[in-house]
Length: 402
Ligand SMILES: *Cc1c(COP(=O)(O)O)cnc(C)c1O
Image (cartoon, rainbow, N blue to C red; front, side, top):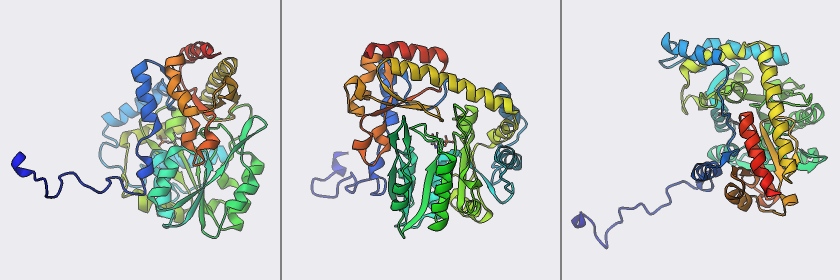
């Protein structure tokens, strides 16, 4: 091989950075680092948000049946199988009184992640500003970047025991270049659920400033303490300027199936589909049939799922408070954001890197969800979508910190 190399000729190693400038800041995710740390140290992983038990047997069996019966083993239709599109439309009607045409106003995607990416790629021109609530789910920043948009964070800040949106700050963030608001309620990682009054004002701003809204509602069925999830699309003037996104992963505890969806007006759905068809084209064939059945489960399923998760929240929230954390009790999602300053720490990164050896637990530093990293520095996120015995074990371990 030596004969083929030369000291003066071109190097065999490409000299330009491989990852393009748009994505350079998204090289590796904290989840990979923290999950590897969990494996290496045998710590309990309350970092990444996936359940440690599968969803309903009946839904799993429905997927097996579809697979055996040869339904969905070949490319399903681009917009999704009709059974699932009909079930999604029926769910929106039954829960929220929103009516969507399954043929023109519903689009099945490879999880909510693809729905978010396709929406931004379809609706954002390079240079458009996209407002997102900070801290934000990690794929938002990357999707805005891939679309060539400029992200404009509006920061949720602690007020009366929860992270709240400052509507004046949101209003001030809108400029003539703002194309789109990227919302998330119930909100990961803070557990905030936007109130009816807040959503009504967001709707007024969107109409007054002619903005589109992409709203990530994957935790729509996980709201606690009597809080209500209200889709933004139900507010006056919003149906035709809102892309509503949800997913089966969180609601039915099958995060590996990657069945997500968009409901929106026909023109918006068509636009999103134009981008989506060149990302995955289609995905999750047999699982689409199973999720069609899941969406038709009786209300008791959704209520039991919600109350079961609420009990897990209570268990972990109490354990964290007893261990000395400042606890922001979430009104939704399956995450708890904590403040580590009562424990005498203020750097969430250092705290999370040390936590496995100090207490045998893995958590995520909220700073990774911020552009203004200093704002997020003292906060750490724990997931409670785990079996009760795992949460009890975690609570016992965390008590060592005190
Ligand atoms: C988990 C999650 C998603 C991703 O959903 P998939 O259906 O797995 O792609 C999107 N948004 C938020 C806020 C999430 O927590």
